Image (tube, rainbow, N blue to C red; front, side, top):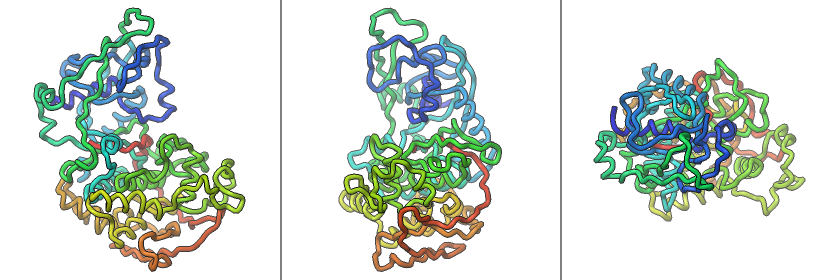
Amino acid sequence: MRTLARQTLYQRLACKSRHLPTTFRRKMATSPIRYEFVEEVEDISNYAVGGFHPVRIGDCYHGRYRVVHKLGHGIGIADWETQEAKTLSTLAKGTSTFSDLFPLLLDQFEMTGPNGKHKCLVLEAARCSLAASKKASWIRLFHLRTARILAAQMAIAVHQMHNLHLGNVLLQLPRSLTALSEEQLYSQFDRPTPQAVVREDKMCLSSNVPAHVYEAIWMGMPTESLAIQDAKILLSDFGVASQPEKESQLQSNTPINFRPPETRFEQKTPLTPAADIWSLACMIWDVMAQRPLFGEILATTDMITSQHINTLGAFPRDWWNKWDAKWKFFKSDGTPIESQRTPSWSSRFERDIQGPRREKNMGGSLDIEEAQAFTFMLRSMLAYQPADRPTAEEILNTEWMRKYALPDLQRSEILEFDHAKLRAPCRTKLRFQLMQITCSPAKRDLVWQKSPNMARRVSKERTGIGQSQTSRVEKPAARGFNIADTTACFY
């Protein structure tokens, strides 16, 4: 096994996923003993029976894996690891042209330690997450072509999975890094620095707790430094995956800023593949824009719901009536309370995509034609009613994908594919959510989208609060996995 593949073992033993939903966090055992705080490491109180396994740099596992560095930290649950292994094994059986978009499960085994039995998965190491790449950036923008390439790969991955709450999307490591020896790794990224674990009462540590903890290695790069050849992704973290045709899922484990509104207002209705389409739209916006489409720091569910309405328009009547907190954000006539008003779609598009790209020289802004095509695609994906959203297959046949994103991906040569293999006739004619095209006022009232299989006429009309913006169209049930942990990441 390659050295960097061994690193992933530490990530799985000390367990990754600071983005897992709260329902999973509550299951992790904690110790009543208090420890002195150490920055940028896991919660030391999770080293207890039923919790983390104490891992040390240099430890060997399963007779073949040696821990040489730490990739990350967070939470890990036995059921989560088991489900991830099942999903990865299922993916490995496929013969898809696009299997490179999914991680290869190199090995799995169980080990017993002072805190119990642990299931260990061995995967190849990754570079960093999308969130980490943006956090490390002073501008929080990917170059335009890079953003298109990332968006195209995400859409293809969703198309292959067919049903998906976006899992972690990771930037792959260059081959030059995956073949590093241990000494070369330490030479390029520094050795892990041990930080002592100290109890607040100064008593001796038990065997359940490691003597030292470590900050994670940083192999990533900020968004502005990510070159096209480095923009190859892997879809990761399948710990809460499900197969909709075999089991119903009512609860969404997606972070609230990526969560579609039906997860709040139709809680007794099982999730469908359309929930993934909403999440994918938010992800594509995130790689194209400087800020997320919905949700800021400390945003509540009600705040995000108000952003949905301010950005996308009026809610369906039954959802509007179910929302008890609406009067905190809107007046009795349905207009926003000025102090609670959030930007419209056109304002967000200019503020978060066009303006920063012009000012910061990040590959230019979107021209009028591309802006219209991009807006059309995303607004259709963000239709309130799940049945009105396009499938992943149809997204790949939109004008923006065909004319801008997929050609850039093909020219990059980081993923071999044929347009014809992505082409498939639309299974149903959809009536998309009525939308406002933001970039060309003269064309706002009537827009045509021409795709290889169909042309869709989209007209704009005003709707009031409590009126439905969409027409429901029944769509064949999709097959595939439902990936419920949705934070965006890169290899």
